[in-house]
Amino acid sequence: MRTLDHGRTALVLIDLMDRIVDLPVEPRPGRAVLEASLALATDFRAVGAPVVAVRVERPGVEVQPPGSDLVASVAEIADEVVVKRSIGGFHGTDLDDLLRERGVDTLVLTGIATNLGVESTARSAVDLGYSVVFVEDAMAALTAQEHRAPVELSFPRLGEVTALADLVWGPAN
Image (cartoon, rainbow, N blue to C red):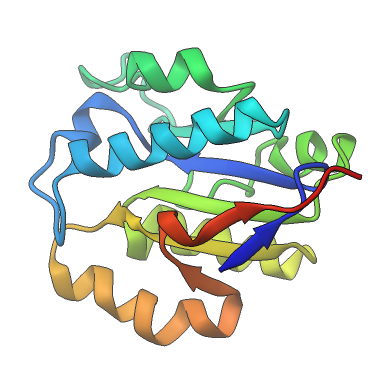
């Protein structure tokens, strides 16, 4: 069980955009990642903890590809939306400022792709001093191997890997 402090924890949803969620990803379909992420977002909102959605736009491209917006249900539940133009959610964005303004020191990460957007965001988060919790069953990558490698090798060194069912909220401060 991983106990979360709702006053200091934010959920960060990585690249839950229609065109990415609909890719053939593993070890679970993108729609399963979306459903798990939305369930977690609902729990965060219920206790007043922030939900931040991060989406990517290609730099220098005037018209983004179809499906580049967040999935509508993600856009609706997010307190903040951050647009990135690189792999990770921190570089060149105001993500760190948004989190610090809210007193956040712990991030719970979900999204697609495990080995790209999620891992890059996590590495920057750790460099910036955040604690990181990875919800393994709310992530996927283009192949099962690309998902497993960071989950088994990198993530345990960067933070804590857990399952959605093992997250619980601590008492209110």
